[in-house]
Image (tube, rainbow, N blue to C red; front, side, top):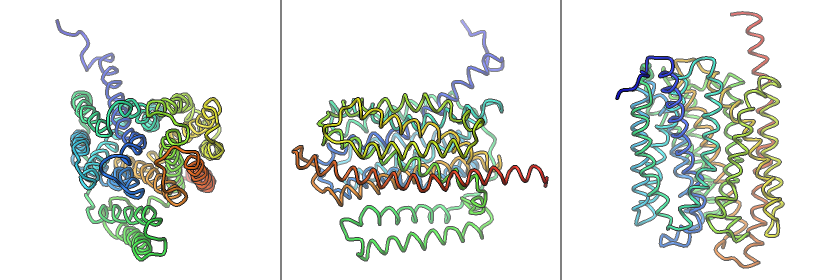
Length: 482
């Protein structure tokens, strides 16, 4: 018996549109979840046969995010030029391959290579999902689609915590990567059937610019992560920071001179785009500072099992889902600047509240601290994402999607690196469960949270000012005309 609903009918078109939207959101959720899931695996990896140092543990977590962030913008241009659906399918296959290599890794370098390959697959995946989602969504529903996509990104962190907790409760750390192999392949099959073909654009591939972007980010993270172990004044660390400055300067000069840059620096003349990208970066800086420390705090200090740890943070997802749906509405009613400013302020307040937690803090008090942060992220993320993607021309949709993704992932990588560095400076033996170890870890965690809160507050104030300035500039152009 054949179906009476064809894709050409209004009902069939609506069903296909919903399937496309669900598939795109599922892809970004899975790609983002692997960042958070790794945080739960840190104790098992630290105690396993690879014997990583504190700095190496940070690299295991951060190399995925670094490659993810560094390749997002060029991956967006790649999708514009060669077809977004094809690039998305390729990305899902590469993501699954990296997970397989990580699961089979006998040594630390192989594990790092597998993580980097998965990061490259995630970079190919995420920009294409936004482009395909916007193409498949009617104009009057685009704001809601962006909000759902943003929620999937945020919820991915909590899904990684919950799913990773269930796996790590019963399996060694390798089981975490085995689980992502069928996930990636299943998404590939779903997207192949659900996603539409989008007309290709005339985007040029800027390989030198892409290489400079990745090299600059890698040098910056190397300095932050290796500083405690090698010494902040050591030649490798100071050289890494100097190299980051030089490379990013060359990246800007290259972008201004080349005809088709991977990321046009002139875009940052737009206050609204500049503020949106900075806001996304600092939002994920704060949230992933939480994700990296929270899993260890609950296990080392509170004595939770991996499953208890994962379940303890699940309410964050529900809080974010409940608030995200009102984020765009709040922006329309109260303005982007006020909405995002309030959201970032709530993230900072949540971090400060979490810095007061100790081994004696009951979960019924700890939970509201987490919910304050989820409410802040739910308010800020949809509006910030919308500000970025609507600030670039339609022909550069891939670049706009890649830019906001790069801002998110670079913010997450820096959040993990900075707070992980604080832990390695203030606490270097987080493998025991005694009172002294728990107290030392608690003190280091509190300092890390306060530092992260300060960064979020300062950058958040600049973001709110930039959004207000961008709104006024846009209104002025409308009044005066071209």
